[in-house]
Length: 527
Image 1 (tube, rainbow, N blue to C red):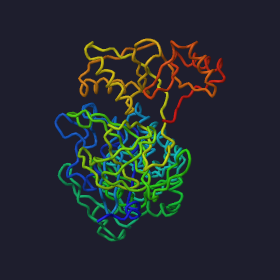
Image 2 (image 1 turned 45 degrees about the vertical axis):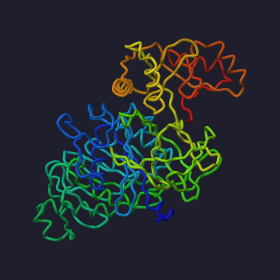
Image 3 (image 1 turned 135 degrees about the vertical axis):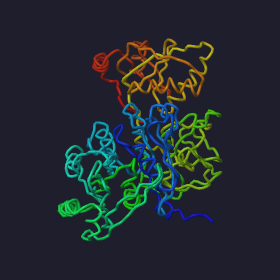
Image 4 (image 1 turned 60 degrees about the vertical axis):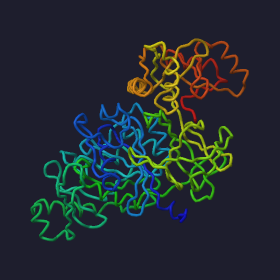
């Protein structure tokens, strides 16, 4: 029996998790999957040599270092909601991949270290959310340790991010005295009984705040403190769904992901208040999610999810209509139709063939059809979705092959890793050097590791005397050709064939721009 498209679209909740490194983002991803019933046991984030690695970390380098450097996509059903969770890279060197993921979601979950408040990476990611008016829900993590006073923490968030915090839960103690939370939505105290490691904790509820049972459970002094704090919360502004949708309010939750405290309350509320799939802009019109015809865009390419087959998967956000297995889609950039037989839905490391999917869902397509980040798929209409950027790199290395017999494998590996956004690959107009550009040093380490593991290529990346890059365009082709003749030794082509100008310093770049006012020197480019 075919599903009702409008009903299915209304059920979708597609969001990304954002945070500063070490705030607990990967842990809460695991725990949301645990409480959502997608996994039976959460993996430990640390001590991976002796323990399970987290379900959302695919790459060998992620499992070794205990960090997330790729974006994982996971889907599960929870309380009649179809949840699509995107776990973004936590490390700042991979901000480009994170930005692209944020173009594919309708809301974000911001994870904060309750002892540190807003950190640099959090602020940068919130700036990206604001550019797209993405609603944000906040989770103050690590209440099992000593943390900022809850009022002080919310004040920190409000001052640094210019957003109003609306508490949905409230902590009872912190550190060793952390007992649980008060659920302001359901007006009840929630305590936790420890379960086996990796399992969901059992919850104990007290519905009456003034019941003597509360005093017996945590002591009269702590119970009175909780009652006083809740009275103070009554003076705060109420939750306004419209202000939340505009990015002016953030529902605020407290807990400890590692101990499963406060996670279910977060998930219960999130699936209710988070927005359903939203409209998306193209160069020519706005696409509404309830339109009959299928549209979607590629926001990420991931190579070698299946190491045995060296596959490449394109992650597609469905923006309207319905996907059905064996349907024919138009690859707009190439002007080519192809039949999709094996679209994939992701459940952590498991993949299943998708029979049907709707606006808001993320599906994976094998990239034998030449898909790239930014490509649009439709049922025939000529559309181009906007807002998916590439950023000019700031660090540069020359790739030097250690085994001359592997040159073709090196080029293939660099091209594919560049296409998925691990770094940017530049070929000079003159010469044979392969130049990699990145936003951070860690990207080179990841590429070196992945070349060796996935492509059996050993290479090193040597420093070069380059310090700045810009893409070059001009309205007048003759102006561009003149610049190419005069600066050929500084010009490169990126993986998409765009012309790039690479120089030693920002000063040299500024001088070139001053001397060539009819050229555009672009630090960002729409893909």
